[in-house]
Length: 260
Ligand code: DGL
Image (cartoon, rainbow, N blue to C red):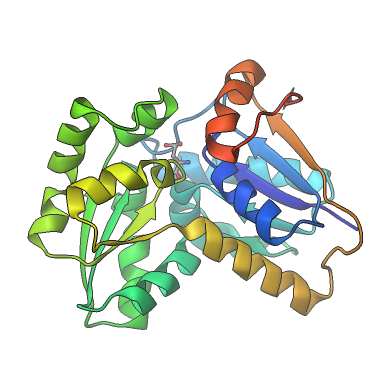
């Protein structure tokens, strides 16, 4: 049976791979991290679309049955433009997170945090408003969170001060639910909770994406059965950097990332 393809701008998409392995243990996964061109979060929409198409074409050469766009920036900027140009399903991380957040909010106030590109695209707000126009959405770009996570700065005074500044508009708006709209942010859950208070609901789209992919494969009759799935990891640069960071996102080390 064919593998599932997953791509991200770098290492963060491994948070989605972790969930896929949890929920779809029999699936083979081919991951591509575009480590030569990361970060996508500060690039123009045109560039993110071009990179995303190139990444999908690479995965198609590996004969994947579905592509998961694990990067929020690529999902929000590229998927609307390219989704219908491929014959296999192209699944992003926006809609599954939105559905979960709309379901979770009690006071109809949702906060979105992400890269500058994701926030600028308004992808999350547009989808939330389609599901429930009465929901009030407050957004905040948090560009320093990505380097903090990659450097392993997940707690401490410096990150807490930055998080307090970034999250102030969400706190002022009294949101009860926040969508973690970036691959790296699930690692900052304890910090975000510290700043926002214990009652905040944090939506991590990775879980919902895996649920959605499982449903699609079941409908298409292409779910794998029988033996434990394998993973292959490709990067466009610096496999050592990728492998070293992988453990933080995947929960276990990777030895064999291949440069392509
Ligand atoms: N993967 C990106 C995202 O989820 C974060 C890193 C980047 O800016 O490329 O938006």
